[in-house]
Length: 516
Image 1 (cartoon, rainbow, N blue to C red):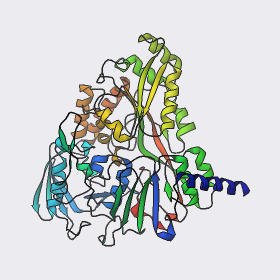
Image 2 (image 1 turned 90 degrees about the vertical axis):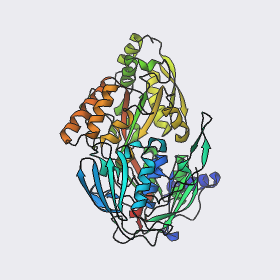
Image 3 (image 1 turned 45 degrees about the vertical axis):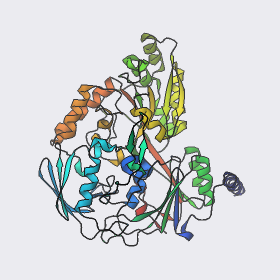
Image 4 (image 1 turned 30 degrees about the horizontal axis):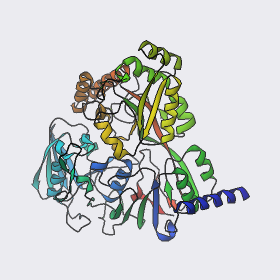
């Protein structure tokens, strides 16, 4: 007991030294404070594409369809019903009487405005799969819209769930104009704070620091999300994990995720903290510039790409570093997504074979390369150590996502350690297709893979979809275009006064939380 008191004393001192901890978290103040190491660059999920923004979106916004996080069942939310009248026409009836947080009633005009604004490529929205299938949305009546699809869209309902909030008509009209790197300008839609209909209202947003939500007492009756219970939810950006641990132990925050294994045991011993682990959909992988978008580079050689595969002990990473809930990732998708398969070529850990392949490719002494990353630095450093052991000497450039994103889509990253949570979408079109259809994220530029994925993404025959995803995934792996590493397990630690449903989707459904 004396040892535990000493640890808590050290933690408290660390918090005070960091200028952190305060008394405004917890049940007594009806304020749930959660922490993340990642700076959220916008709370608008259409332009942020970060898990933190998605968590905030689910709490403050509603979409047309709700996918229950426990059962994965689709339920009516802002839509009361939907029906495909043919394979490219989706008729959606809307709920009456729902109001935005500014008091305006939501109607068909708002739904049409949201998607007609975002669907064009010129909108610059981040996760294009959500809207790429939409030709336009037609207003039929104040409470009915018709989605006209460019092609059959078998995953449309999945795209219309919580990751696609509805904003009021004219929402982006006053977006500021900002300069671009090429000397031109663009509208910065992501700078507009979301206006939604959900369980919580946005009270304050301090970029890179914090975001505060307050309970929407007027939230509509009968929502499958239920009425919100906790009065205030505060997100704080705390880059240092040790500081997060200290603040949780001393009451400065109530919830944290990504708890390292070495901290999980300590936290589990505290009387006021619950520690649990769960699998997630977030996959971790290496992007290799096989097509030479960044110029002539070693990754253009398939022998080098395969050497990278053989160099990394993925099973050891999962067992010794990533921790509970994590599994070795076999393909560029997660196994709970429709169309995903792990029946693909594999590359077992074999550093001797990696060295031989590098020598065969003309690099008997290895080579130097810049290695970009943005999340969980200790995991990137572990991967770099494996690469260094076979002669691939990496210069790690660890950036915030907002700084790394332009480098990746601009075709300047020869080697990058990336992650994708697929925005929680249970379909391979939201993972595999995201990286291999000639977008800014595609460093393979393989027309065969692109065409197979297009067939899989648009076929209304489930078996045909599976067949073509399998073809694409097998070729991606055979050519070693990307190197799938692991899917994350997440260890969560939170205040024992918090009744919080843990789900396997790397989401915090805070609208379901309550105090005990």
